[in-house]
Image (cartoon, rainbow, N blue to C red; front, top):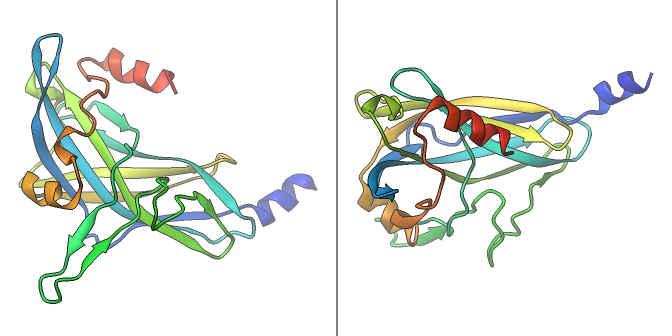
Length: 203
C-alpha cells in the first residue's frame, strides 16, 4: 500500500534543452598543465529546463553530463560553479543575466527545489580535461558533439535528455562569463579508463 501511494504521489522530473539550436555550445579551451605536461581542455555549456510533473515537491541532487571519447569510452562530468552568464541583445543593447543551476546570486536564489507543477531553468557548465593520445578527446564531428544530461532527485528518480552541442569561438563564451577561460583548470585529468572509474567512485 505504501509503495502504491508513493508511486502515485512521487515527483516526475522532465528535463529538456532550451532552444536546442541556439543555446547548447562547446568550445576548445586554452591548454592546461598536469605534471609538467600540457592538457587539452574542452568546455560544454548547456541551458536546460527541468519540470516536476509529479504530485510531490522535490529537490535535485545532481545534473551530470555524459559524453563519449573518440574511441567510445564514457565520460561522466559534474557541473562547475560559474558567474552568471550575460548576453547583450544587439538590437536593443539590453544586457540580460541568466541563472546558473544551483548557484545563488543577487538575482537568483539558486534553489534546487522544484514544486509540484512548476519548473526551474538555468545554465550548467562542464569541463573535459585530458592528456595522452587524441583518442581521449571527446567525440565531435563537423562542429557538433553529442551528449546526455542526466538529472537525479534526492529520491533517486532520474530523467535525461540528449543534447547536440554546437562549437562556438572561445571569445563568445568569454564575453558571456567572467573568467571563463580559467574555470575548471584544477579539475581531475582524464588519462585512462581507471581514472574515469575512480572519478565515479569518489562521489
